[in-house]
Image (cartoon, rainbow, N blue to C red; front, side):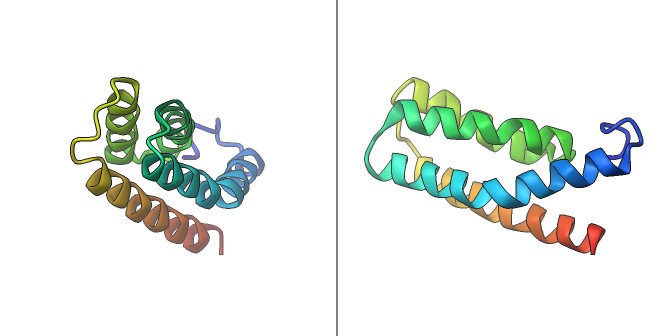
Length: 103
């Protein structure tokens, strides 16, 4: 994370705060979009989570978000419920790790 932030701890903290402030709402948006088969919203919210996952080095989470986005673009709901559940778990794990890192 610090490498991605150019060793700027203030920037890293600001990006962490943004993620912590917005990630729950994005996951809720994803869950609602899936429930309503709102493919554009599902793709948008999944896409939005990819960047912070990448910034924080959560490569597996990037893959899950990308898979959800791709399936939403194709309007393919095959195993999306499981993927969205995994995405929520990944967000919660990253939130916990970031809170622990920054105290």
